[in-house]
Length: 341
Image (cartoon, rainbow, N blue to C red; front, side, top):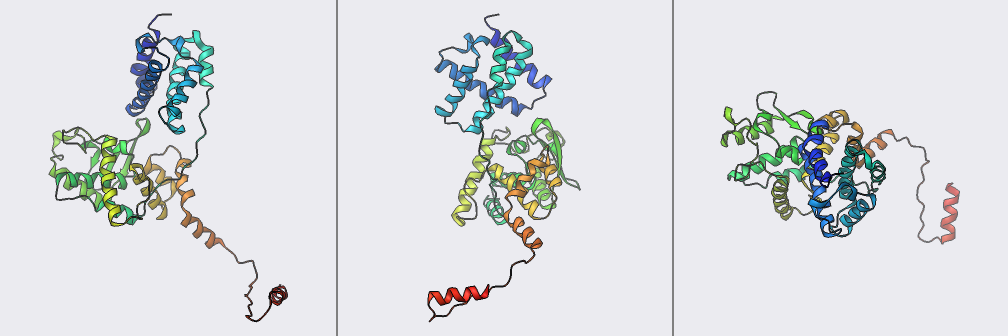
């Protein structure tokens, strides 16, 4: 084997295989790159193998297991993050099965490394009053305040993932009736989300004031920073956290702990469900591949569960009236109960 066989396959995996043969989105490829940056750091710091000297024969099951343990012990990664990194390595090894079959036995051993079981978490969401409070915080007298209000309103109204909002360009917005938003989701799958008139009006004002309605602005990012570049996920999270802090100073309990950009999406889904929108429509709005994924919102909606149980409830137990005589002894009280039975 060539001394630089790892570098060759690594480059081919990211530049040809993932975007070309598999059609992975730039976000997924970026996530895989993060995993391999961590792997190279681990190999350099722990195994003392520099990136330029790394070979395919160094990629073994014990090494991968040590890397995964290092992620949790040294990097304090959660089991969920560990699983994401393992998924990237699995994908690389599946590619190597056909491109470097000489090490097939080792590739099978790595593919046999299981994902860790993780606790299922319930979606964190806020009430409609909580969302209204957050959206009332931006100062619309300022340029950034108007941008923040429009961006956070759209994040909620479209039920979009934060990266989907970051990737929006001007030509993905249709302001004429019926107003819609084109969103590119996971796996580069596009979906069309209807926009309510209030959201459409907010967007139109924002776009006109920022010269985004001009014909040449079609490819411009819908939400940009001071340098004109599209906002990043961390940038949107910073904006939201600023207004969450401000909102909690007004009402401490109305916004749950752990509320994040993705919680805006969860909140929209819960509010649609509570308005009796069928799950299949919520699935399409959120861009889920299966309604099974969307069903998590039905499972956590305790109010709807109680209403359904109460609607189907039929009284089967007899009426029992409590008997209490202040001067009776405990023995007399028990005797009274038995007579009722």
